[in-house]
Amino acid sequence: MRCVLSIMVLFACLSVKAQHADSTHTADELHNIKLATTLSLIPGGGQIYNGKYWKAPVFWAGIGGTAYYYGQLNTQFKSYESVLQFIIDNPNYTTRAELESAAPEIFNAIPSPFYQTSVNGVAQEAIGYMEQLRSQREYTLFGILGIYLLGILDANIDAHLHDFDVNDDLSISPQLTQKQYFAGNESTVQAPGLSLTLSLP
Image (cartoon, rainbow, N blue to C red; front, side, top):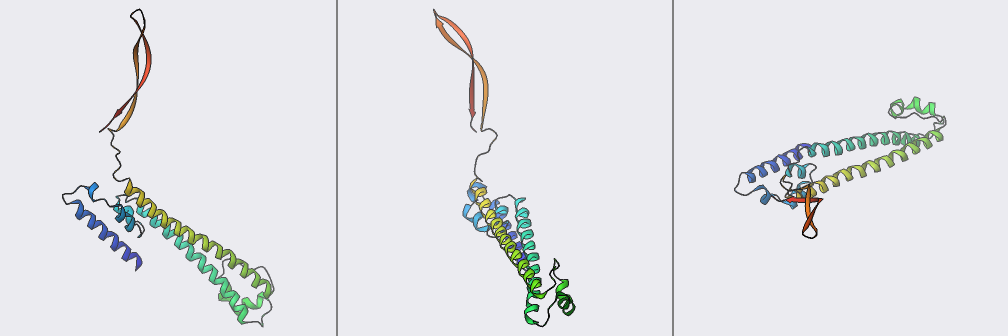
């Protein structure tokens, strides 16, 4: 549902931009930095507004892939949490074999097997796995936030550079020249030199 809503908002932004482009104003006059930054709150929105359409799928893939990885880590975390909760709820079991026999569906869902044979050993292993997965989840959240903020920053910078003159006529061309210098007694000497020509549009 969220994806559909985001796509609808992006298409609405594109249609508004197209309507403005058909007006008598130029694109430079219509380009709004604040609007580009605001639209970038929806991943890819600012990039589409700036005309950098190829960047939007890059940010979508970055956020989507990182979010998927977070979901996988969260599922693994819950599988070890289920094992630990089962041990707490059933204090009469003393070995790993008894635990696996009593709840095979729980132990089949864990990504990495337990190596300890006692219940306390299994519990300690489960806690260790959970701590590792918790740290990885936090890093993944920072990754999602980083990609999101990078998208906002990218849209803002592109909006600022939208009116920057990159005309091919604006260039500096070096040229080798020869100049004449007076050497006294009204005689001249030619010497090589270097000149830079700045061409403005």
